[in-house]
Image (cartoon, rainbow, N blue to C red; front, side, top):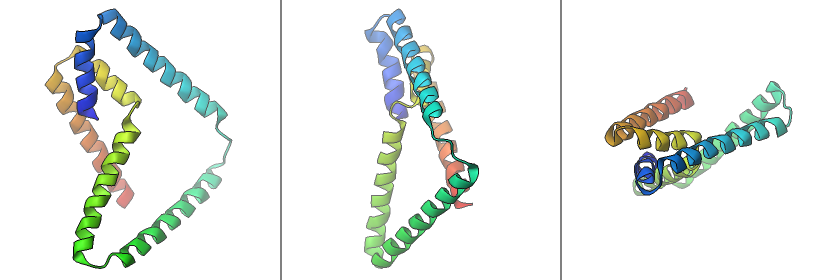
Length: 140
């Protein structure tokens, strides 16, 4: 996703006038801001305890699903295929979740202004650090 965002940020100013690119970026930030405020305003009021109970139930369902999946895949060849399948599914999930994200729009805007390789390397390092922290916290 970072490569796509940086590519868009690099190519967009080459294809359109700077003023048009500025207004597109402005409109994207405003739309996402309004959408975020609207979603927060319409969110049902839930207590912290309700959210905690819901999260615990989801974790229990997830854990039982993982146990059932592990019982069904006992051979080493299916384990390596399962590992690859899980990796591919995770990659697609991350790509889909990042499309249209504010961080991707920011990456596009920064790539339009600064060094292409610097922005690409910086965003990739930031993303890797974020993923490592998420995995560590998830494991904890």
